[in-house]
Length: 184
Image (cartoon, rainbow, N blue to C red; front, side, top):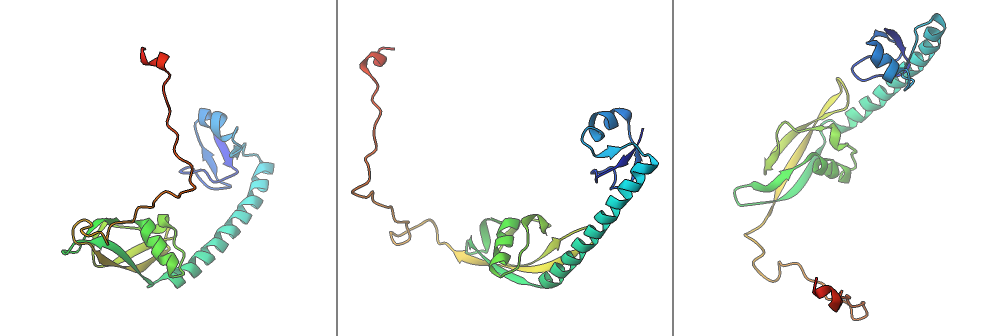
């Protein structure tokens, strides 16, 4: 069955495409969800106008992504993470951590735009790919610096302070089981 797409459908086509799909897919999904219509001459003209607006929007988004790309290319950020004496991290540096580090530098990068070839588990300098679209890609530099930890918190100075309950804080109530319930 041939249908005219009114919206982009993942792995099927974009606005204005006339695609051939199985009739059940068209009747049960595309048509009820208003993603497609019958390819009549009137419908084709109507969708062509929507397609022109969509392509203009895509071109505008691409220009803004290219501007972002030029501001991000070559930027550097430093992440301080706990590491042992050999430079091995306790854990790994994630895309979210990299995104947060660049946000502190004033550069906005979404975690899903960051592509890590492998997990970052060593103290070192890393070139990280940032992908904005099909062919828009930048490379940023991430320095991972150690926050040295000698064993587990050895002294009382390093231990986190426990907060004492305030004098005016309500006391915790305990639940008492009635005597009749003890025999069950």
